[in-house]
Image (cartoon, rainbow, N blue to C red; front, side):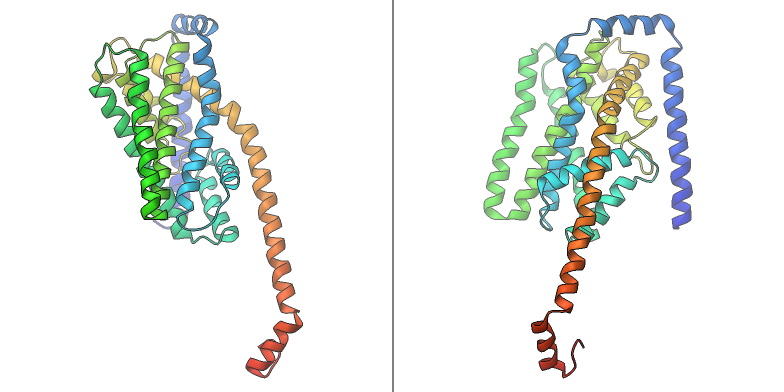
Length: 324
């Protein structure tokens, strides 16, 4: 597809997403009685559910940032704090059409970290692949765990792969740093998807809705997939309806309405927005400052090399003419 075609397709997809988001809001407000019930439930929501919904987006930011940091370390040197700032900035900018945050991050790596574009793209692709693997593992575990299992049993089962992945990463580093960083990226990506599942569990708890662990896993997977749709900003609209339809699957459990599922996702969307706006603005300003400072340093180094007498003498010895 040509560049103008991509831009046109991106604008259309973005508008469709916004329309779907508005329709999700209309659908949610269409039943005043249900809305009042949700409001009453939120007012008396358990403290743990409020905390995971509010703090969850910050945990996701850290997990994704560390995952991409590990994957980028396979190709060059990037600071962990630097990567967190890049991910925070991209998180905000990716709410716009055509995912400018992703494009900007790749350009930054090429200019500042001297990491090839193809290597940055490869790291981003690996991040998506690892997210898919993490979703599959969590869903598989939830299908295997007996329905009557206690919450602590579920937590233990979900944490076992995390421990296994940490051990595998340590072993992998002994064989190859590149393989070790890939396994470490899987550790952080699994943690990220786990945080998403906990956030949805908290959102449903805030609404007073009981949902099975399998239902949470299915909804988390649908949410992750919707956010990967090209050209859309953070899965606007697509995520809300994807979560709604996932909740209606037979495996999700009995009594989960589409309206309650969309309501749970809207709760998470509001929490994300509250976090991403100030965080993204701060990160964007820090990234821009670092980019400008690095360019200034490179210009200074180039000027110093150009006017270095030793450098000029070497050029004379080799070519007979200064500066050739």
